[in-house]
Image (cartoon, rainbow, N blue to C red; front, side, top):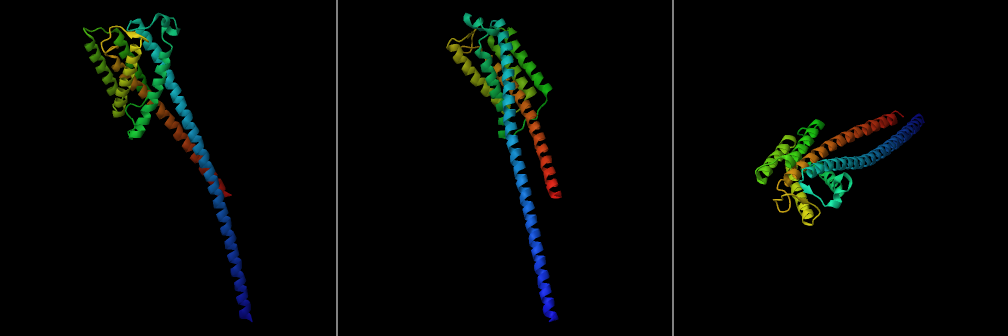
Length: 269
């Protein structure tokens, strides 16, 4: 009889321990599932916030590049008009800023496209551009670009070939001084080719004309201007993209800290 009682007592204690272990395991599993759901919710919210922030940064960068393109187009086109390099019909000269209204819009759109394309090509090629990545260098690049445009309107050589070679050397010097990347050189060449073809079509259709054309309907130094402009706008776009990337990194760190705080609070509970 004592052995039977001891056996029943041990069986009851064992069943009680098993039930306690089972209930404890259920509690741990429920808490783990709750924590996983909280982490999943935080990560999904973080991803949605990062996606919206990335889209907002893209729109903001595009607007900044569009504004820069419009301002540069107004200033440089006014310089060309004062030097009688380009001629517009008389009805066009009566419009705002003594220029065609569509020129700033086209230049602003082109600046936005080129400026957004440069960092995208860099990331696609896996070659992040790290040469002189500061706003002071970008501002000097803009100043050199304006100087090249001023030289194209003011300098006088014995023939247009000498002027074109001089501006080509200045444009390559701008790329070497402020860029030195294969993607920047290739996109600059592509921008110069496409913009020159579009300009040839506009002049051919009588929208405006160049004085003393020597390269079909335009001046032979025009591709050099477009090349240096593409490199300049590309540097602006890269710098804006780097600033946006720093903001995204800060946002990621903020969400990670918030996520760790939630996890620690849940573990304490």
